[in-house]
Image (cartoon, rainbow over all chains, first blue to last red; front, side):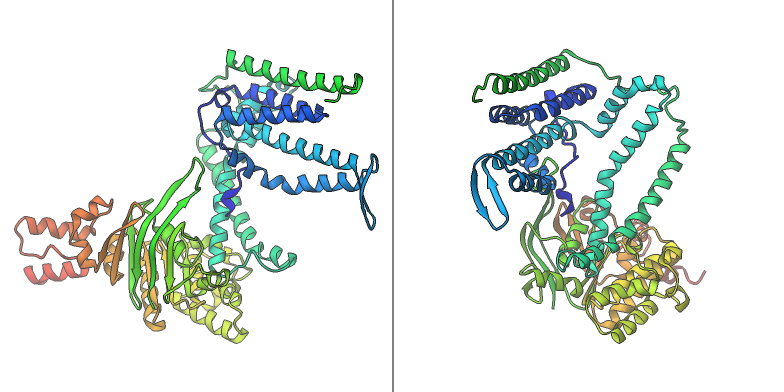
Length: 275
Length: 283
């Protein structure tokens, strides 16, 4: 059921990646995103795919979980591929039907685009959501944003809002599941009928869900006030984040990956090497 | 027409690190025309078992039989099982969503594609059963008190006239008067509609008072089954399953062990009072 959503879910574990400093992981994730976007030749995509396989291996996350996490982006994946295939008009003509023409370049670009999106989702979720607890993640974001404090921005409030939002994702999923079950027990049919009928079947979920989330927000704010919450002023941390040699090595490896991808680009475009 | 679970196993989140075996080869038959209590400590699999009964969850292994037919046989039979086995969830007040209480109770019957006259009749009957006044029916469900919301939600299932009514902790969080009201209304419904009721509860007192038969679950499997007398006379086994006998039984056992001439097998306050009055005369 709805519990199948794995995008943005943390799997506890004890690997090098799990232990890494969340601030460093965020930076590494950005570098990885850069590498994925910089990649242009097939060989660099193959190389990045190898990196993702290695990440799966090191983090000990089941490959099935990573594949399942792709499910929500499947639509985007195929939609962009579709656009690429039918709107590219260069290269050799391969097939033609009615107003649709398929060119070799289009196929190539569509394939690369699909690789790019899949690698993007897989690498960021492996580096961040699957291996970093939401609390660690917000700590990392707060840490990275802390220079903005000097500009008068309240980074603590921002991080607290993020961590509350993330903390309640599983709760809301559970609650939605419960309400869905309760309405199904009254005969709501979510899986048949046209678009309008299905959209209408959502009303019995959204009304109670909204009502209960508002109630929950109210209770949470009361509980926070009762425990004397007053923002980030003078607040200390139980676990101070520390950069270790492990983190530095991870960062260097990641910069190495980016450098390799860029080198591959230069070799293909400037020297015309077929890689 | 019994409702039975046959060798049912269920695993949550199979093949993920969160894998959890909730039911483990459970065999359990709910007989016709009875109020059956389903007990067990937290996490023993009662609620999972309840969701099996109307096809909300599909067993990983095993079958759920209603009228001797597997309810998970087809998509259609699974959908229709919802109307034959009505399930009231824990804290059902959070499922109300329509603009008026009347409309909310009518939601289930309308999904059954009944005629408008029939819907009207059933809604009014169900509201009467749970003690909602005509004036309350016109209100928005969000204006009702907690206990009234609970009644409205139960009425929403009763209006579907299920042959089996399954209630998960129907009295949780209500005051003592509210508890007794709701439970006795459920009994009344069973008698007048000639249907069967399954109540999941932690309250030994309620179970002793209202149930004809009691099933005790432990670790996803059936551990005891019998009349309240059978079950509550085995206090040791109950304690091993993480439960206890009713408080009044505990008291009477203690009196019995002190050598006072009372029976140790007393499960309701009324029976205990009767015995003590017999012993000491009117107070």
